[in-house]
Image 1 (spheres, rainbow, N blue to C red):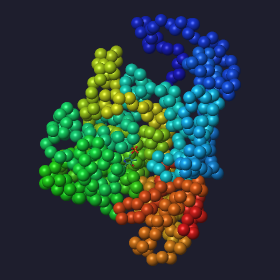
Image 2: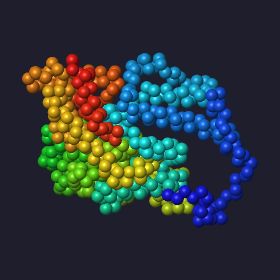
Image 3: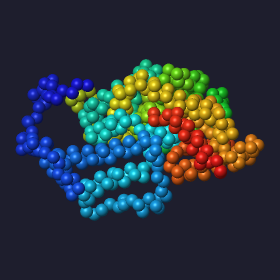
Image 4: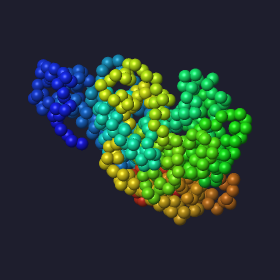
Length: 535
Ligand SMILES: *Cc1c(COP(=O)(O)O)cnc(C)c1O
């Protein structure tokens, strides 16, 4: 982008030019350059805009806060630093002063508050933080978030977010091209759960446009939707929020690797129709939350076509594989879907939060959600009001989640993102390979992970000779949470655990951070054995 300082004449036609700002409203030029006064005794009233001459102090204050963040980032990537300093809530309340004061506090205290806030924070960007689908701190994305905060705008109209709206358009079109949609529409939503809700709302609107005005009575019967047994719980949330009720979210059985069974989907659709219910929406999962399984999209698309149902793909977790030639075959058939949820804040490492939902058909989002608020979406604005995105969503204001994604993508390019994804999968393959070298210590639940989820039980010494079977698994299921507690106390490693179906508690290791290297995986295996050997 050009960094032209002066406004080009084209942008300032005479009729748009207001009178120049009166010089008396400007601080004297030399004020910008004078050294800041000492921050320690100052208050917020010494900063802009309260003190119009507070430019140097404002800069100094913000630089100090930026330094606090930068120190934190450096420690995040320091392998010798702990991931967390765990305290029980009662202890933490004692060491922190969180009360809201009656009188203003000095800025030095405000800076100390920033430091304290980070002191006990879990370093989610640490190379040994494997706990969440959103791990890792991408520095360029962080820079984007800083700039976003400075711009502090709302994404509902072009009027107040012109550049960010255009960025959103370009980036969303690029993502749709990667997906394989020929046209369509997209929106950024506050998380994958809400993105899934948008998809289901659009599906219902497409089939029953009367619903928007007339409500439930406009429907010919009880709507039902379908998703796999291993899908994300947000589908249940959508069924509840949309007035279907969770009983009308039908869970389709999965095979032993966690893939939805298309034949079962077909059978269940017919069964529900037979009961007089009205199927309208099928959700396939691309990268299930626990096992990382990719549902067979072509086979599910066939079933949806046969029954004329909306086909949604929840790729909140797995969507990033589309950026890699080596991995994208796992989502073959995605181009046949009607909609897809894809969270850049997961595999793509964009800072929280950044979630997108894409539609094959243009115009549905607006027709489904538009309420035409006169005070925001005037139709006689001095620009093409199709650039106003605010009426496509059920929110009013919308946070700017695009800039940190756009900036990250600019910095990496498509090629950099391909390397990014391939790195995560290389590290996962290395982890699996290393675990297979020690089958006595690590029992894999799925020895060929499809995403970067590696599900396993750590086996302590005393159980290594015990006969395999439900009794041994039961004990293993009791041991994993104790090991997790030890990890948190040691502060050296974080991995999540959960039960699934008939499986008792097991660990789900997630590699979703560019910081992870082979040495971290070697460390992880040794640390698990150090902390858990005697359990
Ligand atoms: C994480 C996840 C979601 C929810 O995304 P949020 O951004 O946390 O709301 C939905 N579906 C799948 C498969 C996920 O992994």
